[in-house]
Every structure is written in C-alpha cells, then in structure tokens.
Length: 217
Image 1 (tube, rainbow, N blue to C red):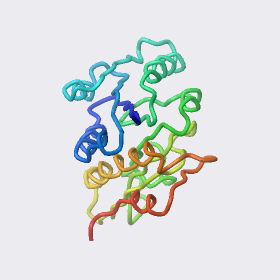
Image 2: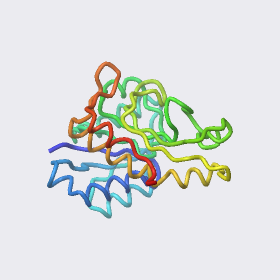
Image 3: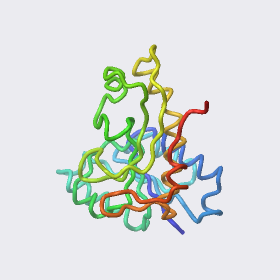
C-alpha cells in the first residue's frame, strides 16, 4: 500500500479534489494508494471536519503552541512518520516549512502554486500575471524544496488571460484546472511515475503529457 498524508490550514479545496478523484478512480483498489491522514496546524480548519466526516484520520497540531518553527516542524514530522508516507501533499497549508523538515522528506512533499513557475513565485500571482501582460496563466505542482516555490516542476495547467479579466475572475477560471491537475500529480508521484533525481522531476513522455492540463478547445 502506498500512503498519502495531506496537510492543510483551511477548507482544503485541493484536498477535496484529491479525495473525490481518489474515490471516483478507486485508487485504493486499483493502485494500492490510500489517504492515511489529514493534518492541520489550525484545530478549527474546515478540512479536518471534512476528513472526519469521510472516515479519515484527522489530526490537529496547533502551531501557536510551539516556541519556534523548528519545534512545530519536529512535532509535525513526528505525527507524519507513523503513517509511512510515500507522498505528503500541501493543500492550502499556510506554513513555510523549515529546511530540516523538507530534507527529512525530500522527494515526497508536493505543493501547488497558482502561477506558471518559475514565473511569479510568492503572492498575488493572478494580479501580477495580468499586470505583466501575460496572455496565459496557470498553476504548477512541484516538489517542495528549501527555496520557496523553487522545487522541481511536476505538472502544470494553463488557461488564457482574457482582456476583461480581473484577478478574481482569473483565479476562479483557473481553479477547476488546479483541481484536475493536482490529483494526477499526486497519483503519478505515489506510483513512482515521477521521481525527484538530482533536483529535477524525471518522468517518461506519456506521464509528461498527462501532467499538462489545458482547456478543451
């Protein structure tokens, strides 16, 4: 069995997308993939309640109870390790992980960023893409590295930027493609179809095609 642990801080719409896809595609029965736990740094996170309702292990580790980022990350790692994760999915997890944590789980931690990396790391990506005059925008799933939004790219989704777009409209149009992309990437990494090798995401051509998501013509 391949194990998936999901980290979130709020509602976790990407968690919901991964959960929905995993059940629709019967990941456990067909591929031996199982979401083992959902962990949040915020005890009140709606994603924890959803996880409990779905019969999943739901764990709260309040970051406010720890004196430092390092202490919190140590407690977080201790909670994750018993599940023997093959993939750790950041699904709206609003914490910057320490270098020690990232190296501890190197090649297993995934994140999704609302831009076509390496363009526009950080915040306000939709606004920045519009202001830069980009004709396309998108989202990127990547391995987490000690450099913020700097890890090896696994997959990307792309949408056009329209003349009438606001940041809010662009974000709303992109979201369904994020939800289509992230489960594909999680499954590919969990099954070993994508691996982190010398700082690069290595995959075959068929996998690469499957991890590029575009609007239907």
